[in-house]
Amino acid sequence: MAWGGAPWHNDGMIPRYVILILGLGMGGAAWADRLDVSRVSTQGEFAAGFGAALVTGENRRGTHRNDFGAGRIHELALDLSYTFIDRASLSFSTDNDYADAQVGIKWKILRARAFKWDVFADYGLAWTKNAATHDRLGQNNVDMAARIHGIVGDGFQWAFKAAGQYVWADAGNFWNINLTGELMQYVDAAWAIKGAAAFDMVQINRPETIYKPAVTLGVVYNMSPTASVHPYVKYHLNAFGGDNTVGAHDDNWKAAVAFSVQF
Image 1 (cartoon, rainbow, N blue to C red):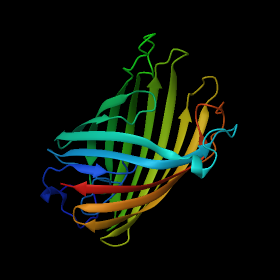
Image 2 (image 1 turned 180 degrees about the vertical axis):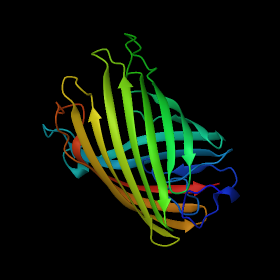
Image 3 (image 1 turned 90 degrees about the vertical axis):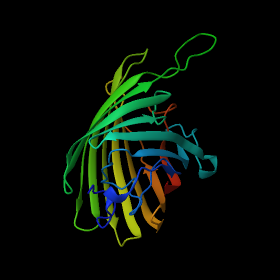
């Protein structure tokens, strides 16, 4: 049995499936359990996700989406993954801040119910170039991460992830670091509360590191054994520590509803 969604669910009984997610590629389901905080995929699983969220915000000059009406459907991403053996998955995603897409692998080292340990590696491909000048748009990058997670009791899930990303850029290569913690509590078989906190350290020492904290909170409602809905909000606090005046926005709200369907 592979543990993932609500502890009363036998994941090993579910056949190969495809899941579609609307809303940042972030959702949850007790029965389908594709995006529970602490889930382990099994051999033969193929999953697809996509999403969108309404984002509003401003930068320090106050010129970037500085009211909710200036928000737009934002952060659309496609994610594909295939678990070819129980301990390893391959992935393809367009969710990369510096490149057109990324390919990667996840290796599941520990898979106990109370404590799991995964390691990740992804390579971001910046293949688009200006047609006239042939200048590359974006930067190739690579990231590596480790994630620990588990299930406590009958309904509580937790996870912590630390990731490092190295970006090759013409103006000088740099590092990013991301720290993320997630919690999920099932109230009953149909409802769960899901939250997360993230802290990014961006463009480290180039010349100043930008610090970007964010928090997310939402609920998960399982409408059926194969479908669920996950409305949530995310608040990106003011970035600090670097020159964040034009390119990156902060002090923004993100409103989204995620749907997951299992076939």
